[in-house]
Length: 371
Image 1 (tube, rainbow, N blue to C red):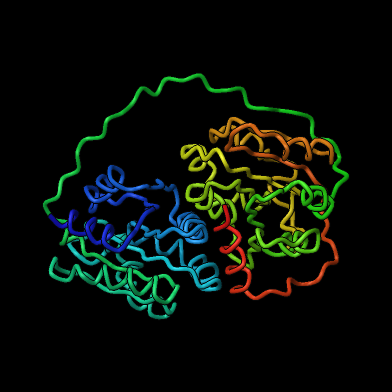
Image 2 (spheres, rainbow, N blue to C red):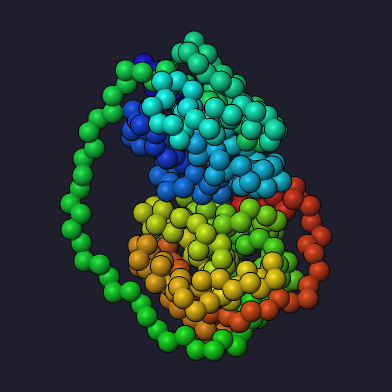
């Protein structure tokens, strides 16, 4: 059976974690993955890029299984995250739009994928028949040998005849917890004020910092080897934190922002995976702070604490003062935890981080390996 052959390749190549999003052409493979591997069911393929990066940074060996159309959602994150930091990620994609495709919308993007991947500098292989299957192994080996993303495009012809077992639906009845409200007052603290307040209380936690100026400010507030400073990859901070939390036994803290969290579908995934060692701190200034303080929906329309609570993260707190922030970070209640810190817009005048991406990656991974 083709699916069993692919699973054997995963086992033999030491793949230990599989973020995935289903495709009806490869439904049996997806079902087998959920039964036999540590897996993360995604809502958006792009989030799997960050999750996989977190798993790699914690010493794991991830591979993604998706429908090929999802590659369109992933390209920037693949190049700006894995390409910048030299992280491996083999991707096995059911290749739509090329074999008995009944959905016209699948054709324009997917039929051009070889040229798109070539243009992006991402190695790929096409598996058109079962006898080509070893190319999946070659792509996995290449990803881990060179520290880069690779793609195996598997024609649905290879999956023909597979059947997926009917799912078992558990009881869905539940009591929906009351969403926290709270009164948001005019904020006094800036992001840099909050980071200076946080830094002394991080202990030995592994910290993922949001892109741009937040990372620069965290470096200035208190550099540590345990800090992973993101240099790009919008929306990927919390996915990276989830990957770290699922692979590492250490406490994981993500310092994210309102713009990034409003642009991702990761909060329901975090809630469903229930990582007890993960804390998300949303420093919400209501703006895209690194690009000129353009106002986001979080400024006066959308409440991130309510979104987190509605996503299923029951331990959610909304804070505005240094004392409340300190108390929240020192709270040892098992996670996942979501701390919504209301701050005012503004960026500190701090220098660039004097570390290369490889230096950030290597010292972080060394710190992460210490128990």
